[in-house]
Length: 340
Image (cartoon, rainbow, N blue to C red; front, side, top):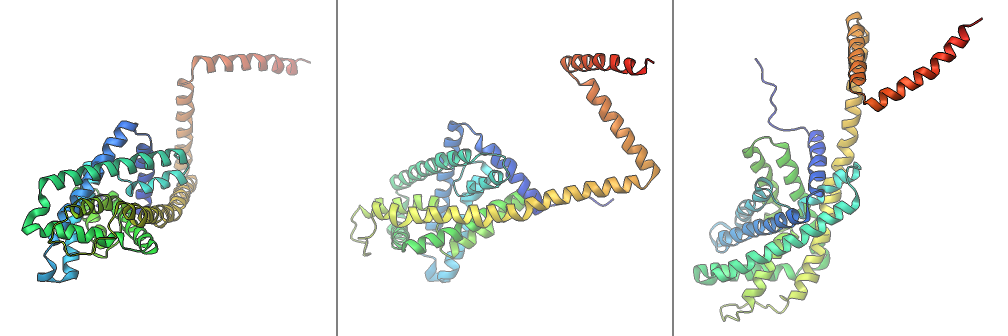
């Protein structure tokens, strides 16, 4: 016997599931949403911390390209924890535009979710920054891990506004594709691989993720203030104002464009209409094929009779009384017509 089990969902099925997931997310209570957002900020920070320590001295052995590739692979743990562990991530929640476009939720619900989750992600990322800083993690390998963290932060705040914005678009395009692919898979291994490759790609290519940067840049700022003589970098541009204005603002805007338009809107536009059309065509074909046979007509008649009986049985007493009144009004009229 051939099994009908499919290892992955078809794209139209993914679109419909994202409508359901998005509707559920938008209706979470404030406390649940905020706590889950804090966890997501921490989880993405874990990915950043692991990536930093894994790659801090790797380039000299395997080259910059391979080092970035490995950094992307280990960074993927962040989104794996978010999607499989359960948490609310701002960049992934840009896909709430799918149920919005389908009129399942209102724009106020989307903006509420984004606002609460964005702030919660920031709180979670800063919490991990403080824990990592006071743990002394950055002192590993004669503080080479700390130097790497500062280099990462310094490089991010020195991007131009346009560079940061475009890198933000490309980043969340891939992040939302990772969310899309994880939903396509039906088992945990498939979900992990669906997340792994897009996230590896965005990290290896140096794209910008606003929530990850809530961990990377504040950690660099804290380490910069130690004024250690081993730091020989020009850190004049690494400030809190440059963090917010030169990086977080353009990257956040780019992430929103990448997630809402290039994944959310385009997939909704492509597949939402296809789902409706396919369903209507299938129903029409089924009815036509049934009408072509005598048994088919009997089948349709039986279904209609069952439906009518089910409807009659489940009518409320009020509805039944109203129908009785209507019948009483009609009968005299019928009798009057029959009289000579």
